[in-house]
Amino acid sequence: MQAIGTGFNVFKNGKVEGIIKKVEKPKDVSSLFINSRNQLNKFIIVSTSGTATFVAPMLTGGVKGMIALTGAPESHLGLLLREYKIPSIMGFQLDNIKFEDIKEGATLVMDCEDERVGKAYIK
Image 1: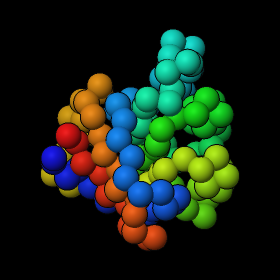
Image 2 (image 1 turned 180 degrees about the vertical axis):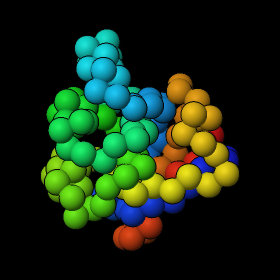
Image 3 (image 1 turned 135 degrees about the horizontal axis):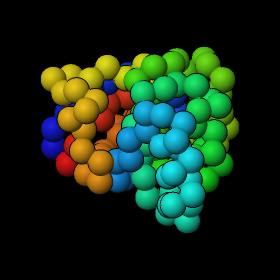
Image 4 (image 1 turned 45 degrees about the vertical axis):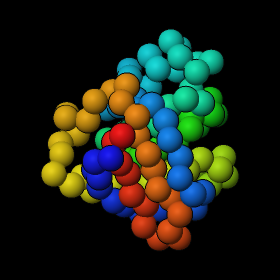
């Protein structure tokens, strides 16, 4: 597995594995929600935004996990992620990889075992 970064663990929930779906713009959210509504529970969302309004449809759709490059556990999104019990890492810092280089469809493992630090790996 290739480590891709660390951030603030929002919801301590062990390790979670899922398919990467990248979200950069509101149209990415609506497209994913419309085209994959019944399959959201397979995906770990990797988002450039850490705002609740931006990703809310995916939370109610039951995504498997979420990584946000911005935001903090104390934010509105952090509260919602805990409420929906979605494994999540916010304020995610990429290590030796750019967002553009993360391949959609690859398998991502989120390590949310530590109370404070969440880690992610591409399988």
